[in-house]
Image (cartoon, rainbow, N blue to C red):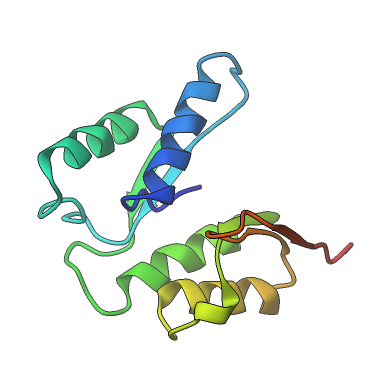
Length: 130
């Protein structure tokens, strides 16, 4: 599952779609924060985004229009439907944004979490063993 935001979200979705080409059992579910997410993106990012959505297995949006809570709502849906959360994330740079809230929510839901630090690429695994 992916929110398909520019950067890690978009390239992770592109990789998942590429892997789907050789694995009929693999699915990519895109949970968008709002329908107009890519409206103001650069044209080359919008093209990549719509290509991902065209190839994904299923797509849904948690809101029609952008709202302050839309990003967290989409991330919460992803956590709710995941056994393992993979995140490119630095907890030391927490600002209280949707990503920080989603990581706290994943911990509260006792999800297994694999974190890749965005600067050092250090992998941390928090496996709950439930």
